[in-house]
Length: 198
Ligand code: GDP
Ligand code: MG
Image 1: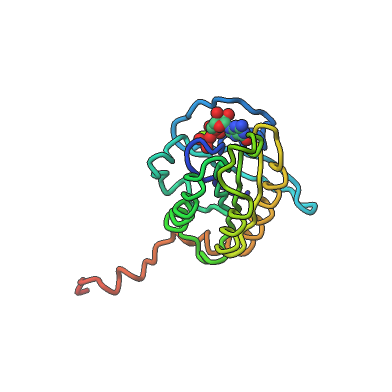
Image 2 (image 1 turned 45 degrees about the vertical axis):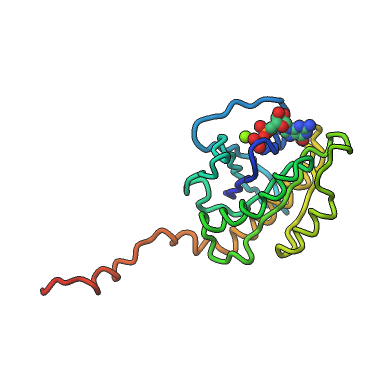
């Protein structure tokens, strides 16, 4: 089981890309659900069957308060923006920081992020962030993979999620041991500071 979370400003197309990828559907309106929601997709990577759980927000990203359960145990994080919206691109940095704080991965430097610029089907004149600028950002953040997509027309979606799945699998293999014990409590800690005289 691989866990993937999609982060980015409200309206960039997070719900749409997930629906397109998993259910091959595009709608111009998705009802916000209560609490965090996920879809699962079964896929084969190099002859191995894996189940990818893709978590979507329910609109709480407007307040940047997704709760720790959303982030916990994520194997890959998709950072998504709208290529026609400069503000959504500028927000990527803070989404990345938020992820690292909340998910607290054991090796933050090597944690797999994938950046997606969505809505490339919209006419060229509306484009606010060039591919070059986005690529420069990704290079500066440690060579993050970058994909441009249209959730509406199903362009680039499969390719982007293929890399997401592969990176998630690598991360899971490298760190699953640590994750299993990350919530454990060290019972020896209290014993040392105990004031019990017996
Ligand atoms: P979220 O808030 O990030 O989950 O964004 P949504 O998936 O709800 O999408 C916000 C709006 O953008 C909706 O009206 C979608 O139909 C639209 N949208 C999403 N992806 C695309 C896309 O690739 N192209 C176009 N033209 N519109 C899109
Ligand atoms: Mg949404």
